[in-house]
Length: 283
Image 1 (spheres, rainbow, N blue to C red):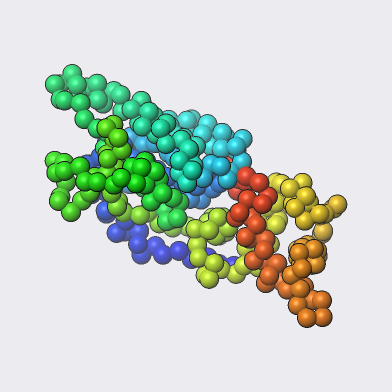
Image 2 (spheres, rainbow, N blue to C red):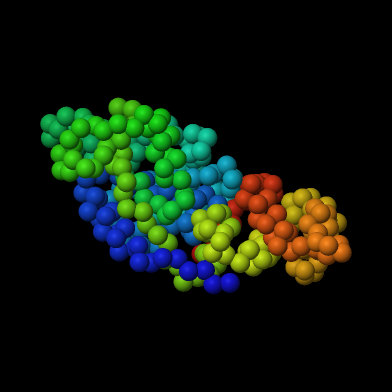
């Protein structure tokens, strides 16, 4: 299965982010904790250059905790601070402000030494579609989104969102799209729901999901579908799941479409438990 994205949006998104970089102190790079590599824009380092950055591993509740720790160590080795958060439940929100203050301490100390009055940290969130940007903004702002007035250098049409007294978020930065050559990246984005199912071959996606579970979480797969041993091929596994769950057509034939929909739905709804689809060592 070949999955294509829409690289035509890349130039516009890059231009919008680049134009607004000078207005902010720090970038919040939002990624999916289950796929921190695949859910990044590969050009992000080049786009934001030396601007201070905080990587936010969102949906951390859905990812394997030990693997998330590996990713946080990976970013730390690159000199990048990262946090594991769950914007849907509001977990980890307070740590974002604290971490930002730590990252920017030297800058604000220099400004204070020059006689510049203390002000709120100005931040911009970047991330690919469906990684949770809107949810994060609403959580940080506690859904009390309001303009902060005419911040110098900002056009009237742009909106700053208050996050307490310590931070302001620049609203609607350009969304960065993943431009990938590797179909493995496309599969991972598809499994986690970042690509519409109508654009996909669910059978291929299901086989990929089941093979991944067989390799890295075999006991969870066995427990979920009451297997004593894992079948040797995908068809046998489809047949077993179909009969177990009643995904049948007339004559008792297994309905493979229903099996595919079932497995993907259960994968996304954490019926197999928290799962990470990639590790730093993979790259």
